[in-house]
Length: 453
Image 1: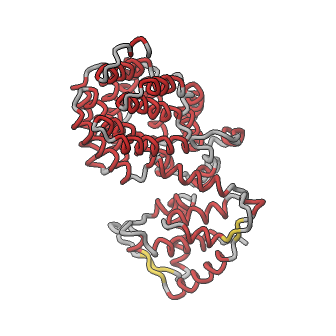
Image 2: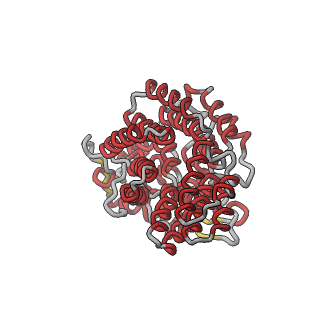
Image 3: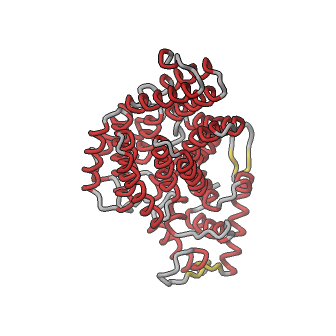
C-alpha cells in the first residue's frame, strides 16, 4: 500500500509542526527530504490549500513553514487517516534485508529529526527495493561529513529535466560512501549522469588515496559541465587542488587555485580557497602568509555562519601554529575546530581534529586522554574507510609511544603511517612528519633515531 505524494506532503508538514528544538523549516529543506524540487512541493501545498486541509500565509518575510502553515480540522483528520496508513506499512526481509518484518512506524518512532522521518518515508515509497542496514549506515555517514550533504543541499532540479535523479535516489546510491566493499551499480550511475552519486564516489576514492580513480570521475562530470551546479563544479576544483597538494605539487596547486578564484565570484568559495592556500603556504614555509589567509577566511566564514568551514580553517591554522612551536595557540584553534565540527554535526570533521588534540594531551602527560582521542578518531575513520585518516592516527600513535618511551612501538606505528595510505602522505608532508618525529625522539634521548626511520 502506497501513500500518494500529496498526502506525503501533508504528513511531512505535520511532522515538522511537531518541532525539533527551536529549528526553522523551509520549503527547500522539506522538498529535499522528500526528493522533489521546491516548485513541486509548493504545487502540493497549493493543492492542500485548495482542498482546505491547510491555510498558508503569503508574507514574503516569513520563511519558516511552522509560522506560515496552519492545519484546519479537516487537515488534522486527514493526518490521522494517513497515520493509520503509515502504521500498516512494513519493511520485509525480501525488500529491505531485515531479519523479520518490521513496522515502518517503529522506525519512525526511533528517529528524532522530522526531516529524517520525511526522508525515510519518501525513500520507502520511491525505491522499490533497498537495504535497510545500508540505509542506516549511509545516513550515519552523511551526518559525519557535512561536505557530502552540501553536495545535495543546493540541488536545483529543473522540472523539465527528466534525466536527473531525485535527491532520495541519489542519496540511496551513495550507500558505498567511504567503504567501497560492494559493487556500486555503476552502469546506471554513469548512464543516468547521477552527478551527486559520482561526486560522493570520487570523494570516497580520494579518502582511499585512489587519486587517479577520483580524477577519472571528475573529468567525466566536467565533460557535462552544462548539467552541473556551481557548487558541484567548485567541489571538483577544490578536490583537484587538494589532490595536487597531497601529491606534493605545491606550485601547481597554487596556480590552479588562482585560476579557480578568477572563475568564481562566490565569496564562500573564495574564502575556502584561501584556507587551502594557507595550508600550501605552511608546507612551503611561508607561515606568516598562511596565517594572514586564515584570518581572512575565518572572518568570511564567521560572517556567513558556516560551522563546518570554520572547523576546517581553525584546524588548518592550529597545524600552522603547532609547526611554528606555538602549542598553546594551536590548542586553542583545535578546541574551537572541534566545537565547530560538533555544531555542524560532523563526526568526520571531529575525527580530523582529535589526533591533533592527542598530541597536545601527550605533551601534557595526559596519556589516557590522548589514547581516548586516538581511539575515537580511528573508529570514525574505520566507519568511513578513510585510509588517510588511518595514516594520521598511526603517526600520532608513533608520537604517543615516543613520549611513553616505547621507541620500538613508535617506529612500528610510524612505518605503518607511511604505508597504509600510500602514496599519501605527500613527499613534503612525509619530510615534515619525519622531522617532527625525530625532534620528539631526540628530546626523549633516542640519539640513533635518524638511522631508524
